[in-house]
Image 1 (spheres, rainbow, N blue to C red):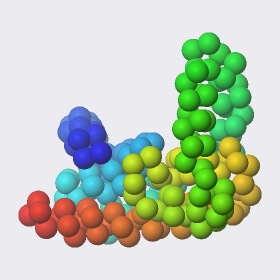
Image 2: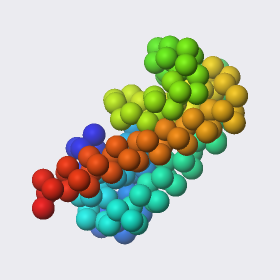
Image 3: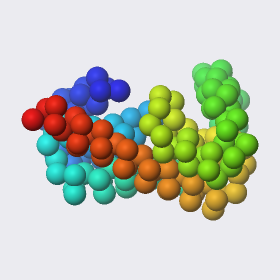
Image 4: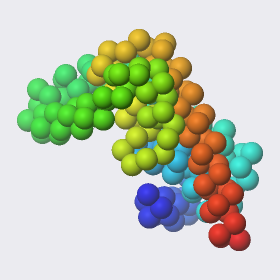
Length: 166
């Protein structure tokens, strides 16, 4: 993930501010808030400014995923170009859904909040949508998961990484 973050920071920073860079990184699947906070620490953006940008960037796509992804996937599966890819995405997401399905709110919160490869708000929202979880419950679990990820990634990015970089 660090290599991706560094690539985005290096290639976007000549064109937009460091605040725009961390916001865009936080919007993207895979990188999300985790990558945004690492980029912010590397770009020496104060955490007081970086954290709200990363949170907003990470939250912004979630309602769209929860509300529309099933319909979008249904439409894309009918196309030759995207049909196979969408099926693979659904299968990969559902392979990670056991604990979310079993523990619902808490499973989704921990899935989103604990920064492990393949987890996060995007995948959590996708799984919640595919499992047809209650949108209010899943939205709250995802928001709480983002809060947990923020705390964990603040420590990693600004406390640990920040001390190594300085």
